[in-house]
Length: 229
Image 1 (tube, rainbow, N blue to C red):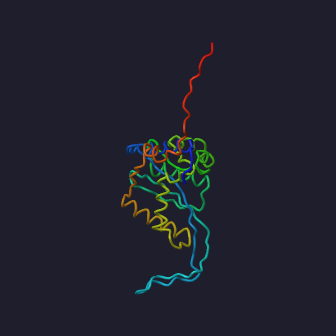
Image 2: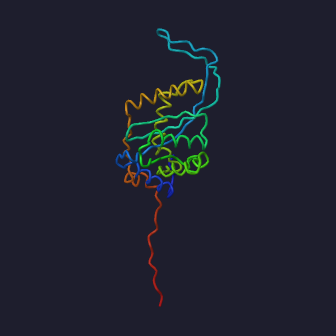
Image 3: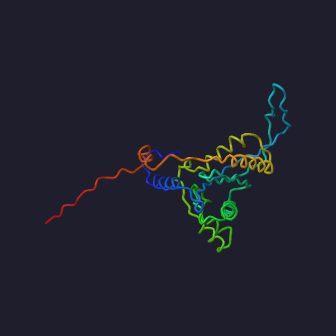
């Protein structure tokens, strides 16, 4: 969703993220996008009928709700790498643990990870201090360079695009429990990483200033004061 009229906060955050997306690839300062989404866990009341010649598989219209799960998506668009972490919830502590895994497991050699994410209330350095000892929290914070997408500008988060692909290719069916969800997501991740699917972000600040001109505040012309004697 894009705001309908002039919005200085939106364009300031938008141009900041666009600048990040057009930096050259730097393995010491990789650009990684983070987003998350939910998945309803649904089981069958009756076993589905398997595929037969000229007949697709069939499932009963009745189903059983087994709660919900969350998927954190980490995506480095220039390298074509992603990791989907399945969790039961998406609390401050879940976010903090994903950040520590990002830095310690996936990017231990990076000087800093340039992290693009939205303004969700859990997406703050404070979550690290709520989860880890101050020394550890500070160590993690100092290895991050955080950039927030604009409010109502989630389309700018490339991890959201990956979550959409995951939903279409993997999650568009009944998955009854966390164990199966983790297996299916891991298989999807392995296949997509093997193909090294990247995103070539083309939209620039120059494009934004033309195509989204209505979002930019209109400045009043400067007036000169006449001195009175």
